Image (cartoon, rainbow, N blue to C red):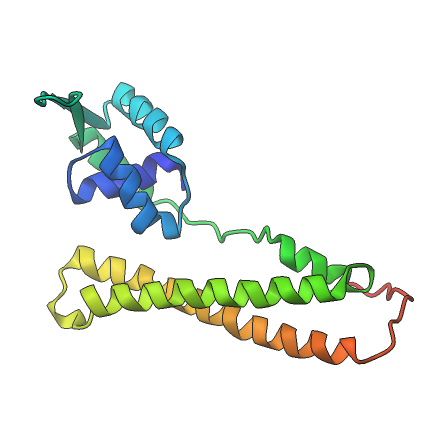
Length: 192
């Protein structure tokens, strides 16, 4: 997926300014696809040049003018075409897991604290997702197709966070048990 498609997904929901789009990324799509505000504004310019979005300038009194972007029919066609492409599984690029690969060479108490901190961060994200669920998706039978799609994405995010919380608990228990044992410096050559 590209940033262009993430932006088209948001604009298919409703027209918005670049600022509103950046805020939408911060509170919804950004949970699954990250982009900073500068990247979003650059991509909006590129999408305008392709004819996938259209910007309409709105004059404001005592404020700078604002541009409201909406998806065009070409943009909708691109979104439809993109939806037909296979979605590759995301690859994992996780620094914390890399530290576990060399657990006998790292500062065990420091890594243990990082795992505890990570568990707290995932618990906070899960709490946020649960709050969103309670506020917007309690009755799936009453949801339209677009909202049902967002609900499925939210449920995937909730499972992701729960899985990390469970793994962190397992890692903490394992590392605490290791901390009571004498340090072994011999490295195993086995690969997983």
